[in-house]
Structures are given as C-alpha cells and as structure tokens.
Image (cartoon, rainbow, N blue to C red; front, side):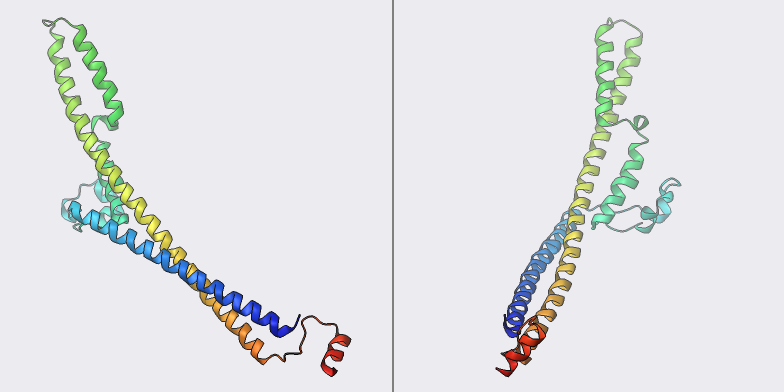
Length: 212
C-alpha cells in the first residue's frame, strides 16, 4: 500500500470520528442543560427557603451545608440534597423516636387492636385513644416529611445525571479536538508524501520503487 493512500484513509477516518464525537458531545450538552434547567425550574416553583443563620438551632448549625445555604432559596440539586438530608432528615429523627411512616403504621395498628379489645367503660381506654391520636398526627407529619424528602432527593439524583452528562460532553469535545488534529496532520502528511512512496517497504524494495 502506498503511504499516501494510508495517510488519506487514516486522516479521513480520524476526522469523521472526531465529527461523531462532536455530535455526541452536543447531545450530551443538550441533555445536561435540560436536566439543570428542569431541576432549577421545578425546585424554584416549590418556593423553599433555607432558615436564616440567626434562626438555626444548635443541632442545625452542625451541618455545614445548612450554614452555607442559610437564607437562600432552594434552586439546585445540591441544595435539595442538603435540605432533604440535613434539615428534613434531622427533624424526622425527632418525631416518634425516629420511626418511619411504615413503622408508625404498625404502632397504629397495635393501638387500634388494643382499643377494640377493651370494653367501652375501661379506664385505660382514654389513654390508649390519646396515644392513637398522637400517633395519627405523628404519622401524618412523617408522611409529609418523607414525601418531600423523597421528591427533593429525586431532583438531586436527576441533577447528578445532568452533571455526569456535562462531564461526558467535555471528554467528548476534548477527544474530538485531539482526533481532528491527528486527522488533519495525517491529511497534510498525505499531501506532502510522494505518490510513489510505499508504507513499510523493505529498504531494497523501496529503492527499486523510487528508481523505477
């Protein structure tokens, strides 16, 4: 094979591959921008604002992200993760000893069974009914907290996909630029290479080819 032909094949191949990587980078960038814009729009609509620094409790001040975002509106995935884990998560631990919605359901069922088993004039009935009322209120509060926390963490996860797409796009752009330069160098070399020059031709054969 002639060296010129090989250079042309490799050069064009690298340029085409660079073009494909460029297209992939543009697609990834579009996905990253969509994810970031979507998360920001959805979170902004919730109108959630972090507590100001002077209103943070001693326990809340232990969280670096709550202090850092104090007084700011929640609009990013990172802020959503902070609010979900460090604020909502912290306060959920103070309700019913940190029991989850599902665990409180078991407590609720147990209390209902005890109430149903007692006669209506039993003195213990009033205390059990009060406990059930408290558990009902706690379970409703935990449900709301867990639901909001889950939605915020979903937004955070979506934003992370966007961030990863942005990183992948950067890698694609760099690879495309490198391949384009290599391909262009190959094409330039092909232009400068004599048409009769061979590739990996043994020395004697190469001299005969040039003399011919």
